[in-house]
Amino acid sequence: MPDHEILEMMLFYAYSRRDTNEIAHRLIKTFGNLEAVMNAAYEDLLQVKDVGENAATLIVLFSRYAKRYMMKS
Image (tube, rainbow, N blue to C red; front, side, top):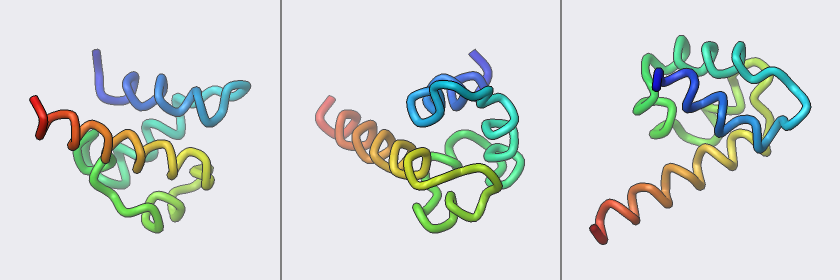
């Protein structure tokens, strides 16, 4: 599954009635790759066009959860 599709699926929970494809591509273009998006600071995520507080919070929370999960595995 391409990185932008992973982001699209995640962003759907912040924007359930919106096409998240452009936002996902914009995030990857801004930060370089999915890993960099997931490691971005909340404030930096908010600087990306159309990324609001809900989306930024979701990305940061998911990233923190994934890191914690991987440490316990």
